[in-house]
View 1 (spheres, helix red, strand yellow):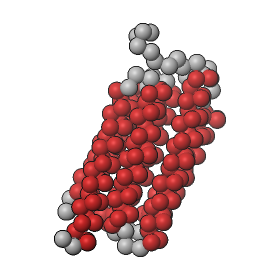
View 2 (cartoon, rainbow over the protein chains, first blue to last red):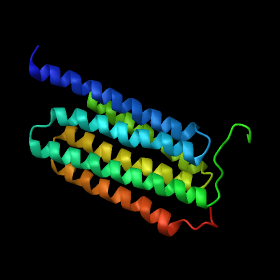
View 3 (cartoon, rainbow over the protein chains, first blue to last red):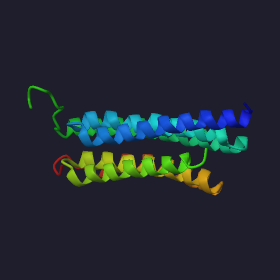
View 4 (cartoon, chains in turn yellow, orange):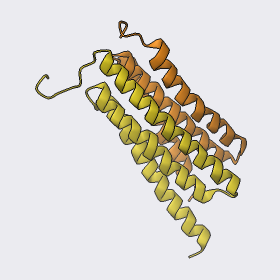
Length: 105
Length: 87
């Protein structure tokens, strides 16, 4: 088994993981009951879906410059989505959106 | 393995479609913002996948700009566009 073939197989595995997390995150965005739980689903798609995609693409990259850019994109997205999720959750709580609870229906 | 990257692009497009449903339904503006945050991430992912398919390096720089803009939009939404009374 050559290194190139092995690299292809491993990157495809990462791609499947990425597709799974993207789809799971967006299904959660549709199905979950309130803003806060939807935020939880959304960050899975952000961090893991994009993260696994970037690992898979970095395995296929042909230069270190490309890998650096890919990792930089990931870092930006992780910092950005962490900040944005915190801000949205805090604003929703301050704005009076009640967290969903099973008893309240 | 040909075709796997293209399949990934289709899966990412499917997440955009599901996000559209959430934007249409609401019920609050925060939910709609979550949908557009998902669009930001899937836009970046789609750009990266297209860069791999077409072999275009410049699309990576585009994805970098998207990554920066996506975080700015959500901060701008929370700080400016979302008053407490018009949810």
